[in-house]
Length: 53
Image 1 (cartoon, rainbow, N blue to C red):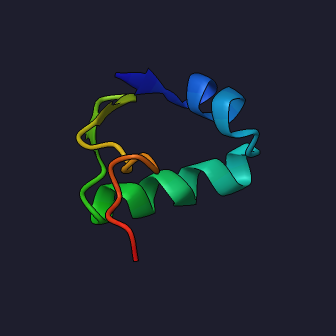
Image 2: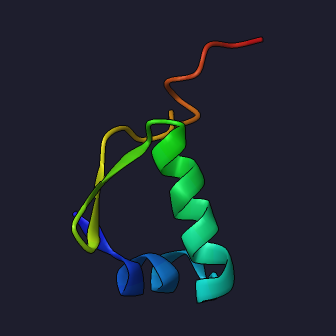
């Protein structure tokens, strides 16, 4: 779980940009909102996990 204050600190985004970014992540299935926090559902792949082009 991550709250908006932590999310803003980690990403360096202001509230103006952090909230729409979180909403888009919810629509795309990356996070799910649980009251005032977000539960991360999946993480991006690391460079090692990606297949070579």
